[in-house]
Length: 99
Image (cartoon, rainbow, N blue to C red; front, top):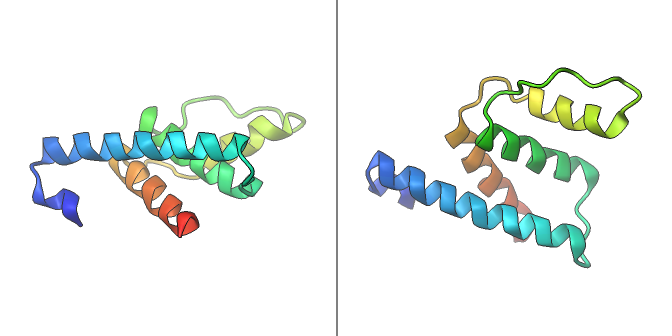
């Protein structure tokens, strides 16, 4: 992978930039003609939250709050995944659907 040819600080900055571009792309997909599946959107949401906040630190929503509970479950399932790994996974998963 090209990112590993840079220093750790440089590769982290590149990864953050690439991840931000991917987040913008997914946001445009939601409002465009292509509608990603709900489970795909949950996966991107979970990786985004893990990359920007870290491990899930919110209380579990009520079961009746279906949407927020699904988001919480997806994010919480990532456990202690590092922010860098979450960014890499976000980009990798986006590449799969963009091909």
